[in-house]
Image 1: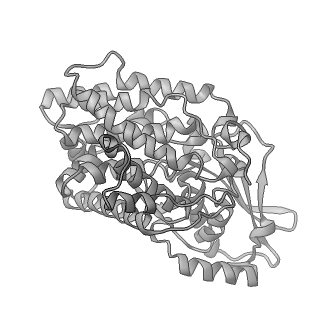
Image 2 (image 1 turned 180 degrees about the vertical axis):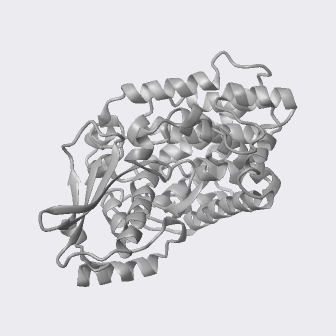
Length: 447
């Protein structure tokens, strides 16, 4: 049973699918290695395939893999300790009694196609000619991971919210809206009732508050940290200078100053993400700035932030279960598009929209992101990703406004737009799905 809190994972940049997911996979594998004895001379080998190979260097996948094997987790990541452990590994080239040199034992496979998921990862222990403890894992977007067995087995009834004692199971937006109409409850109330089947209500509230706190802290760091982002593109952080202008009351085009506030908050988060800082996947790292920006600007107090996140999380669950939030599967429509849809729904709820209007806001937020490609220049989550989050935040606010002006269901339903996104992602060339083999990635000179 998926929880709304699953849509908001605390992790590190620059990518939830290429950094957080591989780190979590490697951590699990490394923990199993430490519990066994191995033949003398055995070594650990990792093969990154698909999108993990094509943009692995730019997304920090190789480093994340090594750190996971060393015991680091995204949620508790300590950058100082990480550097110490990497230095020790470089010196000893040993891991749990096994030989391991990231420079030679992590390979990039650009050739294998027809993968079960485009973010594939194979791990094994080699002892002479024998491959031991072989495992195949997939990073499915937003920090979610799955084994081959898990991906191959069908999801029971394809339910978004199922399990013991769940009062309001739903598998689609239509079912969710039907529950709201029958009970007279808001989407937030329905979601929290389902969360009660997983944990105590106080724990869910604490989880939402923690997510909000990490988001706001990320914005603050991004607003006050200057410099050049790593990776070689020499992209300068822009949020601090824009923030200073806003603080001083200097802003060109005063009537459009709202854009500047949303822009600066979103860019602050995604510049932190590009620098490898702590962010919340919402629903991914590449789209991590949209929800925090909208929440920061529009939500006053803890109650509004909880309503915003719970409602947005419910919409995110629909995309996760009925399509995908992986840029390697859907392109950026599955990341920025989904984040825009989630933020629009959450903001509409904060503005006391009806459940139907909330769904309309989510639909509008995605409808105008359909077909959005994922084409990061240099394989880095910088160009066009940082500005794309700023645009997505503004678009989310406008989607919520448009929804409030329409009382009934829109001509295009949320379920229809989610299915359209899924079909578009399937039809989209792999060049435009986080491989940096098309679009801006090949038309912009890296240096």
